[in-house]
Image (tube, rainbow, N blue to C red; front, side, top):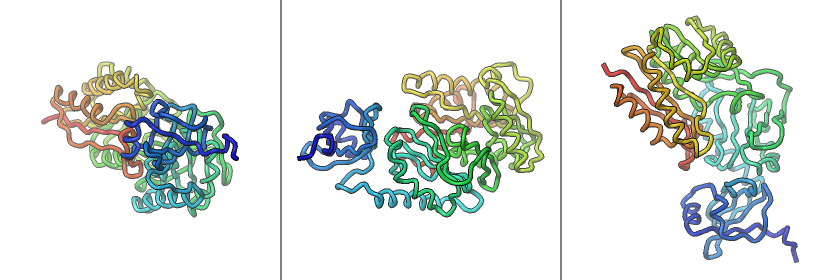
Length: 389
């Protein structure tokens, strides 16, 4: 007879949670579990059975997370083996190949739950791939998919990075040692990415679509790029014919990267950098005006309890930017706070627009290489507002 430690981990859910999972939501929270046959270990597979004792789903178990199970598969029983992972991996890679041509070799290859790899992202930067783990089960299971990544013909190097909530060190797993940044192409423009120490996996690949839109709006305008990071929006604006570009960021390291990105593309547009806190800088009395202002702050709500404060901050940022905006100017405001829903963000900004005679000209959400297959995955929003003539 098998010991209890080797028995399959079996769970049953409360009725409401069972319905939610059956409808495709990929998370099971701790308080949604009605019963389980034993204690589970981080990274093992948990099999969920419905109220009729029939297979419902299988997922990664994490005893230390409020999200107790992240669903891998829903429906009929399936074996989670190398063939399972290869099928998922090949599907994700193929979807991205159809999105980009040779002018872009920096993009997201795997977007967590939305591609069937819960708690894991994989980004490509030319011949360097960067995986980032956000949930502990992958700490013991990442070796199962490492060969799939390193077998890609484009892969010359693989970096593994861990979310701050996980114990362990970022490290290089494959390829020649990397001591600095890597260069990649995005719509024909060159950028550097600090894949070893930079934010996220080294660059904000999710704003590619919005950077391209800004390029088309920048001709003959003075541009202010607030929370500029490494100057992605600014490089596009310069190629789009901007009169001048000003990068505003609190980080000297980020501004230095922005200057290098301008040099990589041999851009002649006047490029200014300002090291300051954006909230404080915008609160000053304006000494000039800009034809286009970009507000792309880091996440302002790291947890649900910070949501209302974040909504107020988005509204405050937009209001503070308006005195700096020229009469025919365009304000571009973005949010990457997953706890702030699209209706909440767009509602706050359209409220500002209505009170200040701004006209909405466009809004965007997650790009195609960052698909959102469930509500919480819709984390990126951007709105374009123009001064009414």
